[in-house]
Amino acid sequence: MKTVRVLTILVAALLALGEIARWWGDPRLVPLAFDEIAVAAAMLGATLVQRRFGPAPLAAAWGAFCGLVLSLLVPTLDHLLHGPPKDSAAFYAVILTAMLALGLGVVWWILAQSWERRPVH
Image 1 (cartoon, rainbow, N blue to C red):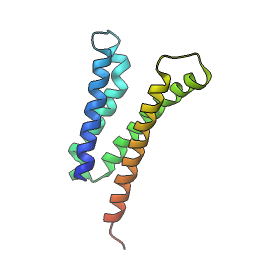
Image 2: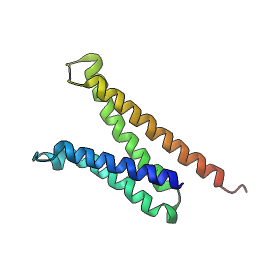
Image 3: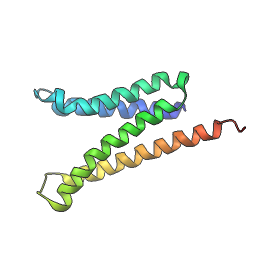
């Protein structure tokens, strides 16, 4: 589970810092970066409480990450497939798809590890 916690911290930091850097100096930072920062905070919080509450907080935080990425991917694919043209839509679609694959893989990894540790009655 240590690898998952380290990966969670790394992804959360990249998510939050990337969004802050993207909107830095723009007065719209607060509403437009809120969703990414909230998910990053949930991911960091899950790493802090994982030892006490088990893998559920990590799985939930990564599930929120997947939901966020999916909510960004769908409109990007819509622009890419049906227009109107959007700059870098193909690039963002590839990156967001990779992020979604990572998130789903980590959720599966967390659940698989928790199933292996579960006592059989």
